[in-house]
Amino acid sequence: MYPSQALAECIIDSLIAGGIHDFVYCPGSRNAPFAYALARYDSLNENPIRVHIRLDERSAAFFALGLTLGEGSGSPAARACVITTSGSAVTHLYPAMSEAFYSHLPLVAISADRPAELHGVGASQTMTQQGIFSDQVVDEWDFSSDTAELASVPGRVARALAAAAGRPSGTPGPIHFNCAFRDPLTPCDEAEALQSAQLRENCGGGVEVYPSQIVREPSAENALKPDLATVVIAGHGAQDSVLHWAERSRVPVFAEPMVTGVSTEVLIPFQQTLCADSDVVARIGQIVVTGRPTLSRPIQKLLASNKRVIIVSPHAAWTDLHGKASCVVSSLTGSDRVNAAIQNSLCQDLSARAQSVARGVDELINSYGDELSEIGVLDAVWQECSHIFLGASNPIRVADLIAGRQGYDPQGNSESDHRCPQQVWSSRGLAGIDGNVSTALGWARLLEETSECPPTVHAVMGDLTFLHDASGMGMPLGEEFPRCRIIVLDDQGGSIFKSLEHGQRASQTVYERYFGVAQRTDISALAAAYGAKIRRVSSMSELRAILNTETEGLEVLHLSIPRPTEDIAFLRSL
Image 1 (cartoon, rainbow, N blue to C red):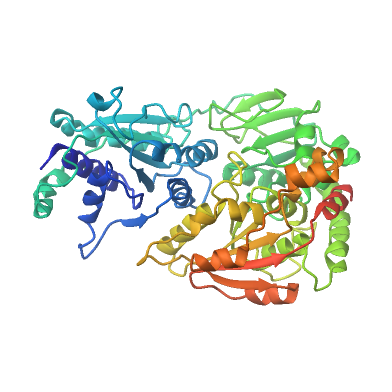
Image 2: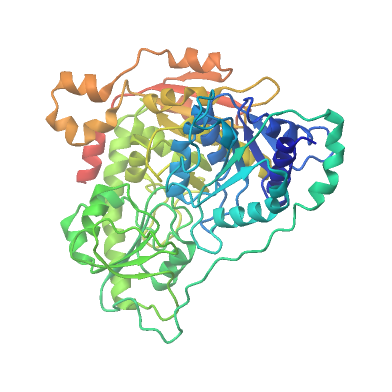
């Protein structure tokens, strides 16, 4: 077996032994040894892996990112890997790697490389790839096809996968393997695949690594001041243990839309609206922060005020934008108590205020009747869909304004039997629109592979977000689309900027040219060209009827809607 092929097979087998199930492969020449290594499994009766072929490396990386979106908020094990050839192909992984880093997702990236003797001499498709992701990875490993290194590969891969899962650091994240392959890049003989069986048997011997724990002594001082009215602010990556503590302690929770599973007894919806109310802010004396709440400006203003702030984070890079934290702890314990009477009173006051806001939200949504609006669409999706992906511009913000209006009751009783979302995701690590189509499709593929009855992923995004990653719909012959329904809210450009300062300061001409940037692309024709099923939706009743059905494969709903700028301003003022 040629050395490059031996290295590729050992890495692939070690990754499989470490729990990697999905490989997203981008065609190339220098990375061809990985193609042959993966192809060995195609003929097996019980194939332990799934290989997804994608042409565009950026979309491939975001698709792999979607494959890492498991349930829960604990440290996830790595399960997906993206593989590219050398040169500029590697640079296209950077956006997804950065999103994975700030979202604490264990994405594995493998890049093929030229050997050392071809660097610095003008060789084709050759650039410095070591360290290419800078500090956007939690670990990076270089591999060469020198035979002497082969025996160390399983142990090094095991270490790398442990780092990706946050063991022992407690902080999961993406990792990078850079593999220098020398020619020849093909196997000696395709039949030699059988000769690697003994090598594969040696690839499971990695050391078990467990997360480190920072445990306070049982007698440790209470991190909280019990006499202060306390709320929890739960952002991207919020810890379930903190949410359970809040339920037991009767502490109200302001949660971003991605934080599902908060008890209705303590969940207070409409966080943007309530936290912009000076009377509400005055009632709050102490804030417990879990996750990374970066969505709402009113929340950031609250965190920047002179309240006592306790950060609960298992990661060294905790979120404290304003440097206001009074205390940072890895978890809350039984010794962290608040005053029950104060908390009951606070819950009642905030619930009453939320009910008042809910009536205003109802009036706005009902005012549209059967006409499409972004507010109405997000409200319908929230009621009808179990797995929701939200574009990182207006959809996530509108969801934050209306989520929870249906069935909300201050006593924690459900007033209706509508379905609530089981899981909601938005790429909030960097909060960009890059790769949203690919990430949603990757998540849909994960659910298809891990669920007996896979649900449809409903991805809601604006027209620019959709067009930015339209190539993510590219699918090779022989590979089917997962169950995913993309709802494109076409308001002719980037309306998110209208609700920011640019909407007030820029002239209409400047705004439309530099911020709105409406496109001439025919969205329906573009999606159809990629093989998606297309529906143009013109009413809320039509949309609701569609949402009450599952889809087979990829379906794109094209909705022309008015810009939601005035609606957003109204909801924030309630």
